[in-house]
Amino acid sequence: MSLKGQRVLLRVSLALLIALSTGNAPAQEAPGLAPAKRKLDLYEPPNPTLIRPSEDPKRTVNGLALVPPMGWNSWNKFGCNVNEKLVRGAADTMVSTGMRDAGYVYVVIDDCWQVGRDAQGVLVADPAKFPSGMKALSDYIHSKGLKLGIYSDAGSKTCGGRPGSQGREYQDAHTFAEWGADYLKYDWCWTGVRKGEEAYALMADALRSTGRDIVFSICEWGKDKPWEWGPKIGNLWRTTTDIRNAWTGRVKFQIGVVDIVDLNEPLYSHAGPGHWNDPDMLQVGNGGMTDVEERSHFSLWAIMAAPLMAGNDIANMDARVGHILLNKEVIMVDQDGLGIQGHRVRDDGDLEVWSKPLADGGRALVLFNRGPQPADIAAKWTDLGYPQKMSAEVRDVWAHKSLGRKTGTFSTTVPSHGVVMVRVTP
Ligand code: GLA
Image (cartoon, rainbow, N blue to C red; front, side, top):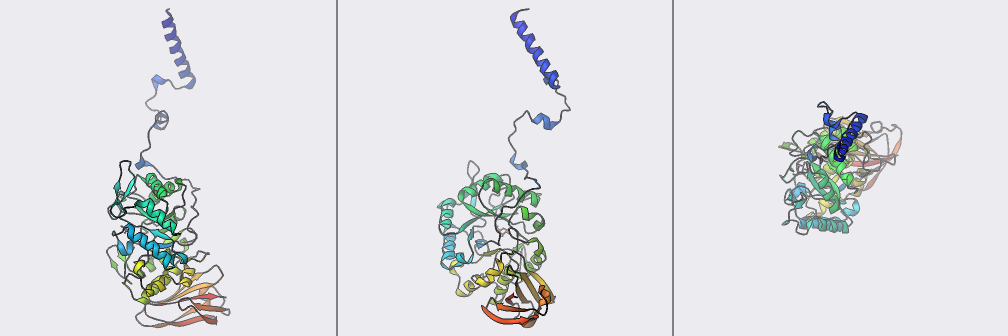
């Protein structure tokens, strides 16, 4: 046999030996071989539309928003008419009015800031409306001691028809992190057959992979019961469709303040530090309610430990509106470190008593009159989990004044659609 013939024989015998020893003869790969095993030999780039979120049962929370987040959001007042000048102005106002120091730190740019994607697929901010770009705007916001909130959507498009993040979760999360975003509101339009938990878990993973602390605001309107799966995925979740600039009544996708209250209240047990029910952004100062109703709106949001996102034109608000948004004693109830969402403890038709346990052992109380006439409402200590014979200091948090010590009951007259909000301290 020639030298070449010997080499060929050697190669064939070697191949046979290897094949026999591994039990996997290359030329005879069985048609029934499990596809997963066959895949091991192939490199396939991941298909972004098939990436699944981590299903690790040990999924942990991100440790953020231990008290309900506070800030300003462009949507309720300005809708799609958002631009850099407006956002800078809002940031300036948050500092000059004392809002920042009262806790309003997130400046959230809602829908319609995006116009498309560049050749690499990176989201592009509207150059006409945001001429300095998002990074410069973010730097400005941070230079004021504030934080940047940005908006995207789990579907192919946002509710305003701009590019959504579906299939681009990691790319967009990293873009937001590079811009310095501290908060992401993630909406639910154009999501087709997606499941809420899957879609939000995927973006939560993407945000986590950036290494930046980004509060995650789930905005799927309560459709897939986000209070059941949200606590380990996000920091807050909308419980309803959008808030109307009105006391009550539905118009298309929007419902009034008391309609939202009735949907958000029963979910109180799901809220806690780091994970909050979100009854939507505030309509205080937007002109659709009376002063009494706006105070009720703000008080009920505070007793429900709701995120407090001002939704009005803060740069041009008058003293009356500022007086509501900047009421530090009401804000303290919302931001109380115990992190318990208050709820209705007595329901006598139009007359209600709400209670929220506080970190100092006290209670915040809201006496709420939904009726058309002023009415007397009494809160009994036993409704608050206190012994009837106990005495406690009662302080009116709107009037900023002590009402003295009371034993067993606190009662007062409450205006129509109004509240009396007090702090009870044993
Ligand atoms: C949805 C959300 C709103 C707002 C708009 C923007 O309706 O629920 O809060 O973000 O989309 O298009």
